[in-house]
Length: 410
Ligand SMILES: Cc1ncc(COP(=O)(O)O)c(C=O)c1O
Image (cartoon, rainbow, N blue to C red):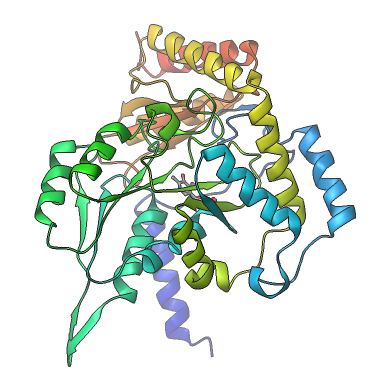
């Protein structure tokens, strides 16, 4: 029964979200995802999708998806181990492993599910996970879940959780301290994003792998903002740092550069993946990936492995935008990643800037507390291979105009 008290409680929660300025409105898109999208205000240039390679509306992928629908059907109505595994699921897993140079791969419905199903299987109460402070919410939740699953009841009202550690962001001295202090644990896992989504900074994987070897720890990387385009062959942050065989576990998504639809995976050592197939709950108890998604995943990997033109275009676009926006006098976080945080520090200014830009036909999002730390409000621009040079220059001119109007740049 939907009691009055429940309704009032929920309304109160919503009210407090609104009052704290954290209520999220969804902008409705009336076209496919792309560099240009149609919204109710008209056509705008889109600078806030994770559509790094511009494949979200790729005619080639759409054609492959249509063929897969005809030949393999719309869905399988099953989890993998009952009757949800087609040959193409196995082919996709094989292709991902080859691409990332990992021993084996297991598909999930999303990277969120891949993360959720990882730690509770691979580590137990006698182990420790050391997680970067700025890791993605799905890693944080996955670590919490591991803690809940492996908690020990000590007596009435008394529960002991396995110890997890949060390291200061990308701070190698702090990581070493945690590794030293946890030598009494059976296994140690260092968990990090490959690229951190709010700052576009790259995890220091070479140093992390050195420390992992020194202190006998496993390394897990969520490479969602990197797989497919970062590193010389687009293989992500392990390739970028030249540590491909030293990273033990990679989780990633098909929802960003790899076509932008949906789906995720975990790649890792053979025994890890085998055990995940036996025990990982979001894999065991959730529906298999739809055939059209699997077929496009295979196609994307072929496209990325064979052609570097999209990666090159993305790199050139990113370098151009980063250089020009800095020349205009905006304060950006340095780096080479297509996530370009334009720092405004003040939440109100950031929101005004995003609104002003939308009026000029540029769609960007302002991020403020609690998504980023207080006084660290920003506009996060995301560059795509789908942007033309004209698109970038148009956006830069609008940033200049609105930035001047708001007194952000001189
Ligand atoms: C670092 C990271 N991990 C995981 C995810 C979740 O990916 P998916 O949409 O496939 O669940 C995201 C998406 O925002 C992400 O940025």
